Amino acid sequence: MSHNGAYTNEGQGITVLLSDDVTVTFKKVTQKGSTNVKKPATGPEPPPGQKILAYFDIKTTAKHSPPIEIRIHWPSAQETTDPKLWRWYPTTKEWKHITTRFNKECHLLVGVTPHNLESMFGVT
Image 1: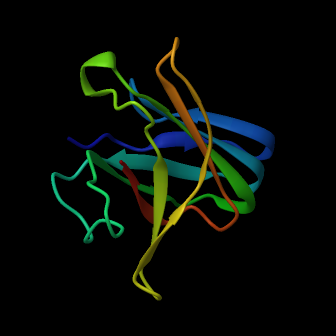
Image 2 (image 1 turned 60 degrees about the horizontal axis):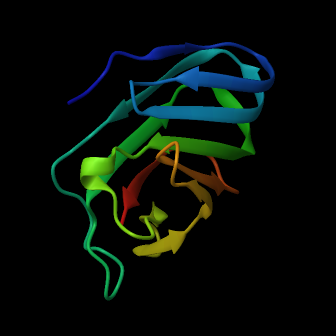
Image 3 (image 1 turned 90 degrees about the vertical axis):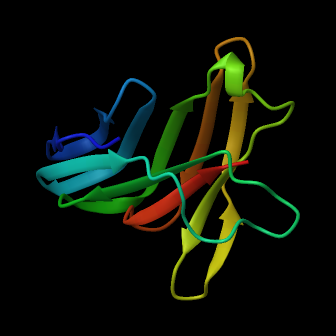
């Protein structure tokens, strides 16, 4: 499932709704652009001892400064006892855990990446 790009305006604290379950907030956008999410069925090999339940390929043409907050609405049907958000780093071929919090009542998984957005993310 993929979505057409969501307009990403210039400014501080720019939040972009990418789909019904994915939102990103940029600390600072210096040049407007388009941000989108694709949800491929497969992706890079999961972190050791983990199973990726969902992949999110998030890209933007907007010029931005990290950090970027990613919020994923995690429905109860897919809920794990302790879901985690991971970011894939293709140059080093490794996943890094970026979860900052999970609100079980709202089914909201939040992570912050300290690097530019172009990446694959996964939920375990």
